[in-house]
Image (cartoon, rainbow, N blue to C red; front, side, top):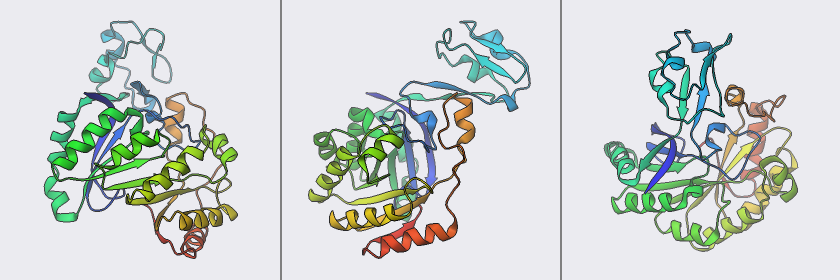
Length: 298
């Protein structure tokens, strides 16, 4: 059983307790305006172009069997209609001006990579975290990998939007120690506008997980002009009612803007700025006022 992943990040400290190995699976059913991994939205592999790195050697043009690569003034360009995603141009580029986003991996290959960091898990209380994209989009692989991880005694975390089949989510939870659960907006219509889907299923699945006794930490991406102000109070009241006891405030950042340009994606966050320190502190204080353990970051 194979999946398409973006990458495996070692020594992660913001994706659950301790030192972790984070596996980013490709593909997501949401299209959040502020996504900091836009290369993870599509299930398909993609070639990312970094024109500023190009040294104009022409190796990509010469090696492409489909004649899809060309050199222009800014740097390399790829004809998407011709490209077969064979990856030869990314492998041969000496300056890494062409990068393949996505590679296939089996459950066993993945666990072999995860096992390499076991000593760090044991010393820090860490483990493996499955994120994305949305890891539940490749459910069969995720379930098999989580089960294999649990069987090896590795602490297993899933970072999810919650937008998935509820029965599958509960079946997966038997092999998961902790869910990091994203809550982006409490208003269903606004949620649909900024993510492409409503939040009814997401909230229902969160409540089902908590009712089943699953450990859950809520994650709240704080974005000025989208979900700040009175929305934070609404979120706090909801989490306290579920109840979810811990929430992490994730301040919006705009460091992914360049990726949207390289992928030729529309950047809906033009003009939006990260929250100020005062806004972050205020949001954390409001959430804490509802009896929630509130932390900044992962």
